[in-house]
Image 1: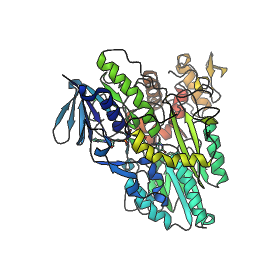
Image 2: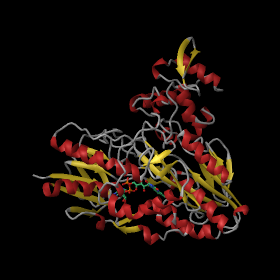
Image 3: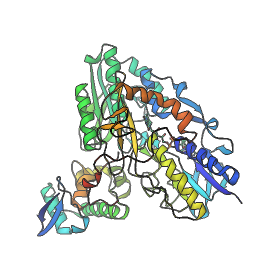
Image 4: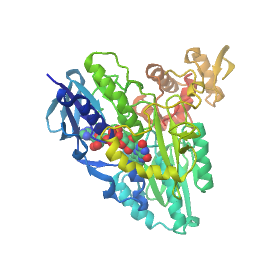
Amino acid sequence: MSQRIVILGGGTGGTLVANRLQRQYGDQASITVIDRDDVHVYQPGLLFVPFGLAEPQEIVRPRHAQFRSGVDFRIGEVDRVDIAHDTVHLADGVEVPYDVLVIATGAVLQPEETDGLIGPEWGRSMHTFYSLQGASDLRGAMAGFEAGRLVVNVIDMPIKCPVAPLEFCFLADWQLRQRGVRDDVELTFVTPLDGAFTTPVASSRLAGLLREKNINVESEFATGRVDASARRLHSWDEREVPFDLLVAIPAHGGPSYIARSPGLGDALGFVAADRHTLQARAAQNIFVIGDASDVPTSKAGSVTHFEGDTVVENIRQFLAGDELTGFYDGHANCFVETGFHRALLIDFAYEAEPLPGRFPERHLGPLPLLAESRLNHLAKLAFQPLYWHVLLPGHDIPGVSSQFHPAAEPRAQQTSGAPR
Amino acid sequence: MSTVMLAGSTVDVDPEGFLEHPEQWSEPIAEEIARTNGIQSLTERHWQVVNFMRTTYLESGSAPSIRSLGKTSGVPIKELYELFPKGPAKLAAKIGGIPKPRGCI
Ligand SMILES: Cc1cc2nc3c(=O)[nH]c(=O)nc-3n(C[C@H](O)[C@H](O)[C@H](O)COP(=O)(O)OP(=O)(O)OC[C@H]3O[C@@H](n4cnc5c(N)ncnc54)[C@H](O)[C@@H]3O)c2cc1C
């Protein structure tokens, strides 16, 4: 009997893994993907929508059209996974048994976790660009914003693409300058981190850019509640930040079915997995890819893409009864839009923090790391067609390896003592 | 990395005073770290959080964030800030003798 591989989530990770597995197994395995809807959003494009640099319809395609023929795509809401009986239960009562399960259900926004965020002002003076609706609503608010306090607030970590809020600040600065109103706007980035980014070298580079662009930073601010009528953010330690227009990045968590599947997730609903094999801790026949997992790297499309290699290899070995050799090293890379048709690029892994250099080859690559350049910006723009035509079909991007190429100092020296 | 004397034993700490090796930790060390960080004595509630942090770290290899502490430690976030002013997750990690939470990247 052919093996039944069931993939939960048909976004970035679910799609690329389904296509790779289909190519590998042909009709030797049945591959089923389940997602709640048929709308695939190219999420990196959300950053550009509020500034009129991308149209909402330009960054959306039907999910079903992204799969190779032979992949069975079904629309359904996952209600829970019964790990002991290798069965997925859908909200409409249908049961889907599996031999191997891949969890690719990403992260969800949880604005309701922050007191005062959801209410009559949500969508008026308080927005997010992390959803298609939010990004579209914010466009009108940005276009009409002439003077006052614009506050960009990361409510809590982890979030998807942790550089996106910084990019939003850079693009807002640029747009406000072009409109000739930058001097009338006080732009503030409010973050729970102790700096612009989590790793020291990138953090100081990015902090320098924020200073240059006259963007204030309020760090170590853990937002406790939002007073919508007085237009103020309150932190748990009783600091306040006033705003006229708030761009919030809500807290993220796993989808609620994780909590209904005992043993699968942590307190926030992320799935506990081995950081190198991406096998779930709950069961040997469950693998995790993308934003859904708790592995300590960025929640990013690049990470999801690089993890794809490991997940596909390890599923093959698991089904063959062999030892898992697929090994994910935490490799991530992100283009950071800095406005004025420029971008910078960061590249890192579990044991290597982002450092200056060149990409893809450390010394010779055409793209500078951690420095602004026009080529980086063009590369970021070029990414959307690559996403639909190379990444989702499950091909490799020419010249870009899923393994990190070390030239940077191993991070081990800084965190000695931490288990790995 | 440097070496300091805490509650009569020698321990290795990072530049911010977090223990490098959780196994060098003891309760008297916790009390001393707490005092130097403005907490005169550790109450039962403090211990509940510190022990929870430490156990979670030793079991899973990473320390919980404030939000997950609020959901799972049995102590609500507001009270966490009263017990450990400024940064509960960081301070409880320091007192519990585990490395500085790296945050998320
Ligand atoms: C504003 C923004 C900018 C970004 N910019 C970048 C960037 O520049 N570079 C980069 O690399 N990454 C970027 N990212 C991150 C990137 O988009 C994600 O990391 C990536 O898409 C994760 O893929 P995934 O498969 O894990 O999750 P997703 O692609 O989000 O897919 C998860 C799927 O699961 C489905 N699902 C969830 N729960 C259920 C359920 N109960 N039942 C059925 N279906 C369910 C959802 O409908 C969804 O389709 C950005 C993200 C955002 C929000």
